[in-house]
Amino acid sequence: MKARYGLETSALSIAKTLIGFPPRLLFALLRRIILRYYLFDFNVASVYMLCGLPLFLFGALYGLVNFIKYGSSHVPAPTGTVVIPTLMIILGFQLLLAAISFDVANYPKKKDTLGSTCKLRTHQPMQMSISNICRGVPPCVNFSGKLICEISGNTVKARQSISAAALAICY
Image (cartoon, rainbow, N blue to C red):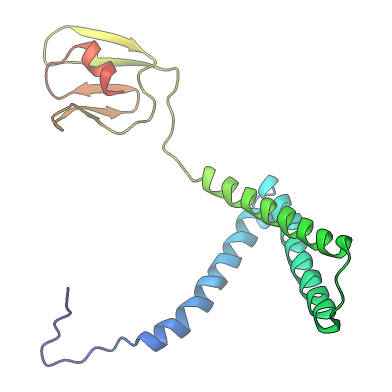
């Protein structure tokens, strides 16, 4: 889609954006990590980052220094000199990956009502109780894509007359 400004000129600059945003994003990331994992809460991801980052950086730096040293002298590097930085890089990367995985897994979710008893209210006068049906899932949609029920708290409200079996299929 092409931008239409008419006779006006855009004040946006790609160069300013490329120069201005990365430092701000990096600062926001560091601030989030420090606040969330070290100031407000100290958990397993904090330990993973405390151990993984130094291991990864030291392994990369040590490997680079030895690569330059042995590469410039045209002498083959001993096996231990190659394996130690490789092991440090792999272990550090795995710990950082585990910290990222922990961060993604602990993204705030909707409140789960697992194990509660939910009531199905149809347009008919009868009411039915269904156990273990509310699991914090989005509203029920049938096969034609029509919204047939909604969840509010521990209650499932039917928008049309449906059976308990049809509701169970939605979940």
